[in-house]
Image 1 (cartoon, chains in turn cyan, blue, red, purple):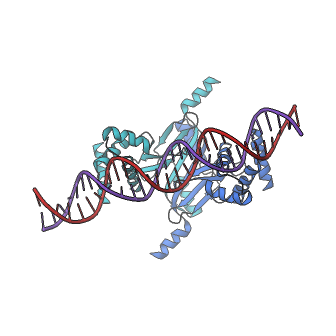
Image 2 (spheres, rainbow over the protein chains, first blue to last red; image 1 turned 180 degrees about the vertical axis):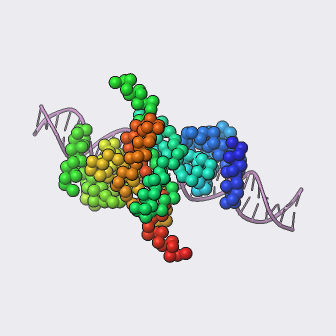
Image 3 (tube, helix red, strand yellow; image 1 turned 90 degrees about the vertical axis):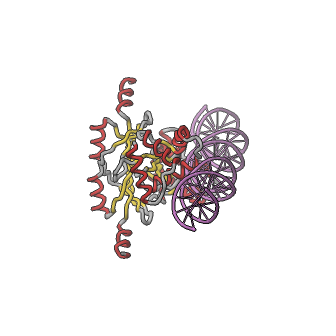
Length: 151
Length: 151
DNA sequence: AATACAAACGATAATAATATGCTTTTTATA
DNA sequence: TATAAAAAGCATATTATTATCGTTTGTATT
């Protein structure tokens, strides 16, 4: 944890931004809840527990900044709110998501499954890939079981 | 064109929805501008040319309905507005997009490049894939040339 | 330590996209 | 054609996000 905070601090300093207490509190929430896909509002409420005086605008500004620096990825699952997802340290690409259409759960996949596909894109379309977004919609393991049982 | 309208009409009727004149006008715009990725507002303005009395709420409701029936796909490129993209007839999966980070152009890829990846997901994660969203961010052919020239 | 300056903050107003409630109109069917 | 249900239209509410503004904080310099 402390190590990651340090690392993020360095990334900010490299662009001459500071890791203020508010920003640090926000980053801590993101690290603690790394598995989740929190909205700005969610994050705001959680940060408030640590730093009650923080304002919503600051959280938005911080997330925007972290997003620009590619420390977090801003994602959209189509429910009208942006969600923020911490990048793995040193990860070059955005990770993938499995969204269950039954229960709404979101699972993360860290492996990069797209290497071959990206080669095809570069070769056949002449498109130089910098990043990607990949989401699968379907039925998770648990819901598959539940469906079998209920029928 | 007429054939596709007919086909969509059938799909609506199958779920006991009607193809009203407003809905038809909306669908016609979507067919005509199939290559584009129009926002609800864009669509509203275009439909108004055909059917000036239509209301914005109706367009939203129609798009929502078409989206539920998988006739259109609602996509989000991260610019704060939802965009609507007609599915190819009989297409099981959503097509892919190449977004250029230089010029903002959006290119569509109809081929399904994810068959192998989906097999891995089903096998290794036990996740039953129903659909996917895949977007690549990078530099398109034109912008690559432009960059080379300018340096 | 006092001063000056810029960065960042918190509260709140503004904006924009989308959703909703209510009334009227249209449509399919008897 | 009468009728009931579905959908449209309009106005307005809601919600997420962004912008504004006056204040505070931290840092550098004297």
